[in-house]
Structure formats: structure tokens, C-alpha cells
Length: 112
Image (cartoon, rainbow, N blue to C red; front, side, top):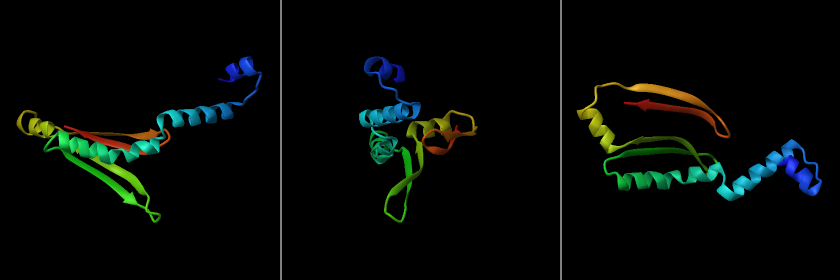
């Protein structure tokens, strides 16, 4: 991007300005990651409607301003529950990872 600006317009832009401009353009085109969290309630409702018997729990907190913050989400499909009860041997694997991108935190998951 810096090279393109230099050759096309003879403009010297530092790395941070190019990085900030790219982030702003991508946010305008795709929306911010905060917008994606707002879609989780609708996603949970669609999962419940399309998969009867599926457990979906979405946990959010409200701060003093009234803004909702995502805490956790649990999904267990009905077909997986039935398969686990009837066919599979009883084994549960637990694992997790740290999120290091824009959104910090931990991703913990259980697999049966």
C-alpha cells in the first residue's frame, strides 16, 4: 500500500497511517467485530427454531451504562445429545486456548 501511494501519487505515508486506513476501510466494508456480537441473539434464536430440542444459552452482562457485554455461549444440538446417549462411549475431552486478536479472552470447549 505504501509503495502504491508512492508510485501513483508521490505520497510518503508511514506504516501506522496505512495500517489505520486499511482498518477503517475494512470496517466500513465488513462492519466491526462489535457488530457481529449483536447478531448472536438472532443466531441463537435461529438455532432453536431450526433444530428443535437444541440447547442454546447466551450469557450477557449489562454494565452501568446499560450496554450489554457478551460473556459466554453454549450450544448443544439435539442430534449430538441423542448420539452421545445412545451410540458413543462415555468420553469428554476438554481443551481451551487464549484469544490474542482484537478480542482478548479464553475459548474453552468440551467435546464428547
